[in-house]
Length: 445
Image (cartoon, rainbow, N blue to C red; front, side, top):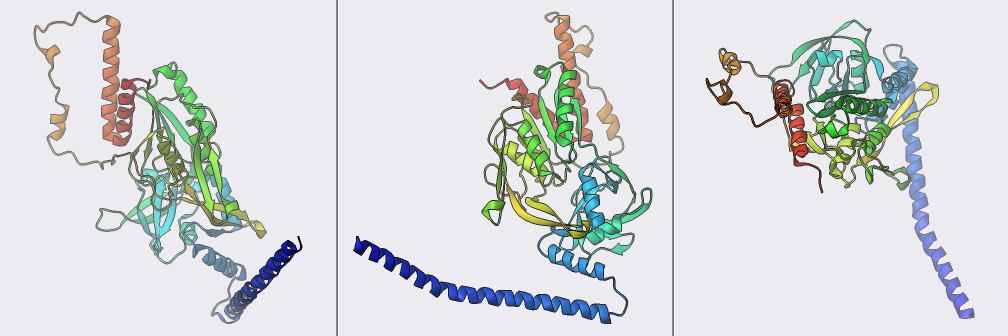
């Protein structure tokens, strides 16, 4: 027993000695690091005082400090920034789904302002602004070298006023100007309708009312169809959806999943990580789902698309999404301002990071740009095609009842409507055809 105590004692002593030998340099290193930080802070104070005392013009001390804070945050990544009291209030208003402006979500890429997506029914959308466009100037003022917040400030203005933005677009040789009239942006989070036998849920943004609007719209369309048995499936249209609230993306994903992980977030420390799982219950009761995405689908949109894709609950079609897979935490600060800080990354259920890679569709479907009709071509397209029924003296089909004939005619009319839709929205028409095909195969046994 005595020997055991000795061994234990020796072990403890050895541990203390080893710890002391390691801790000494660590303490010194930490002290040196702290000293370096304090020296840098002293340097910052010295520069601040020299600017305030010796700059050629009087400076606003508050603006100077805010610029320094913002510079520190924007040096981290494009999504971290300082929000003044006005900016923080504007962000809260935007989250509720109504605000003033142009109606575009923007980010910064290599110093240029890049359009993530135009929002449905907004002045920017009506003016033809596209996801991926670069804004190089605002009212003739070059935006290169400005912070994102400074560029956004240039684009703000009174409702009803005109703004001229200069746009550089892939495929165009020269930049061109676009005139936009500022307006109050009232975003409808979800628009629902039925195309053929498919329920189309167009999700424009993930704001406070997104899930509520989606559920109500879905139930309304099911009721109009006379029950879920008369529906081929659901199309979730997430194109040009810049994202929004994480909890709303989780609710929307959960609405169509019975179980399993929806998304996980991983920060620098273990306590900064979270995992969100689906609860039992599928709004569509197992009906097929197609998700539409494009380069303007970002953040929360990518969470929904990734979750439904990984669980094989939906077929994702369109083009690669934007690739914003980072989590921003908004931290309230003194003076009613706030700090938006990137604190984690998103991961899909299979462990894929969305960041920079985006969501790749299961089926790539480009949205073709309208092409001019060649003279005389329109007449050829509209020329009626003769069939057996048009031939003089052709036999009647007397093997079908009137109800069966009516059903065939209704099915044909729906198919023709979808075909006509290809001219306006090829990707949506493609999605409707996929649902129709899946429905024709019948339910899985």
